[in-house]
Amino acid sequence: MNSFWIKTKKITRWIFPHYIWKLNPESKSVYLTFDDGPNEEVTPWVMAELAKHNAKATFFCIGNNIQKNPEIFKSLIQSGHAVGNHTQNHLKGWDTTNSIYWNDVVLCQNEIEINSNLINKSTKLFRPPYGKIKPIQSKALRKDGYKIIMWDVISMDFDSKTTPEKCLQNVLENVENGSIIVFHDSKKAFQNLEYTLPKTLTFLSQNGYQYDVIR
Image (cartoon, rainbow, N blue to C red):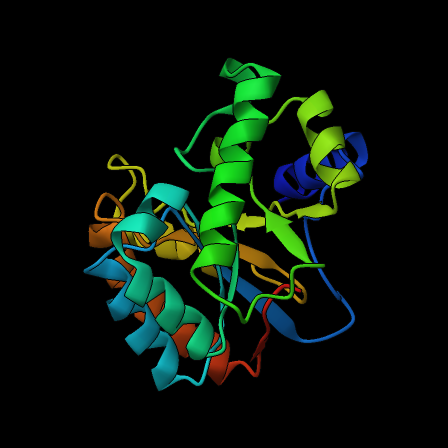
């Protein structure tokens, strides 16, 4: 990992100390996360790949996609994966009024709770779409009991200008103990994800990493 990347990550964490960027650096564990699902085609494929390595992950779901795919959402939980809130309509906090943003989060949380009685409602996970959220929005969510989960490794699988090989490099060159890694279980990301995820899982497993979920 180059020095510029290390400095950038440290500065970002210092500016936004109330967000969770990484977990348990003392343990050789990683936290795989998937944004934007559930998707009727991609999410089951992701689950199958994870199962090959007995890996669990945390899925930050869009409320509208839970509505479209409730059985897939329920299967995530039944398979031992964790789920979190990614807003109802994938809103960018910077471009959205606080009241509309808050309502969108509530709508998504309702979908999460309606579609499963296995959720521990005292623990609410939230990842802002695009990683962009206003401080006042963040403060309101944290006051309501949400943990705001960011990341320290992002594959860039959603970017059509990023090659599959570069996506894999983005992960393997930056992963370390306690890393929170971002992928996307969406059609848009699938071309890159299909290449990157199996190789990432093989690398992590061969190098002794344990897979944990965010609680």
